[in-house]
Image (cartoon, rainbow, N blue to C red; front, side, top):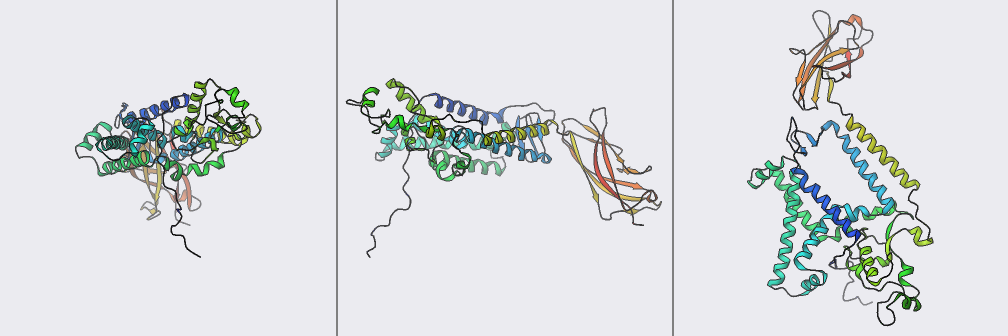
Length: 474
């Protein structure tokens, strides 16, 4: 058998997409989300927040000081479980929204979508509308093409650099860090992080674009398990659009709806506007596809065409598989969605309760086991402990420590300290000794509490921490 001269291509070459601009309610909603998201991301590091202690920045992730400042909330390493709660809330919120309305997160709130929208806007601003960009891409290289392509990529890089630098500003005092950055005095991590995010933002939003959503993002793959017959999706009304003989362009005896219906032709005039505005380049008329991010721009495009023709909207719109199959109304409240909502409400409630009931200070008592006990010359048994105290408030905190649960005469000794004063957000490590006469015990180990008692009429309640006192075995 003869071998073919050419091997068949396993992968198709990428077809570059030039999205066309569109106006409409969903496009306006997308721009509103972009403005809100960019406003929060780029301006938040510059928002000042007066504090009695710490930098006056509203949101600051202080890795050196091991504290995260979120307005009036200070998150310490001991509160890391809040992050687990926040991630759980984000996951179930995503499941809940996807179960209701498909990939609306992708279409409106995903960072890839938000930055790609702006990059396409920059490209359109420099190179023109879709036909002009296609012509520019096809023409031979000359000074005019080099200028426009070069300016586009330069603006993309500037946008990427601002994005990377802004992220770094969340990890230090923004005004001071900017000055240090441009005078060469910032930490190496600041330059490395900015360079990394500049590169990835430029590649993802400027070069790769729809490739990220189609091939890199795992969400497109596992979303199917969260879809059901009642999930709202962007859908083409095939019966109305195709009629009995398919879709046809306007012209001849197919200009009015009456003429088209008489000829068995549907309302779709095959203008291609819905395909041209799609950021991933799909044809929604071919049904739901993995590349669809539910941005609904095709709905705006089709509605504009229907408005210009004086026909009713809805040829492309939000629908569900149940409606498409049987014309029944989609059920929004169903067991899966109610389950997601219940877990989401519970997680938000628990996290809110935990944050609102954050302890003003915490401490840990660890026994020093080398040796586990010591017999003093007066016959008393001594155990040694290490007490770690963390003042989580922005005020000076004075604490006195006592031992509760041991026989009368037990002594807790902090050396030369009778009480300890901690500055705002200060951590201390204390050496403590507990001494008790052994004749007052039965057995070898005896549980008791080390109690931290706030002084200075602070109004704070004493906090106990369990520990164990050991005596020699009789």
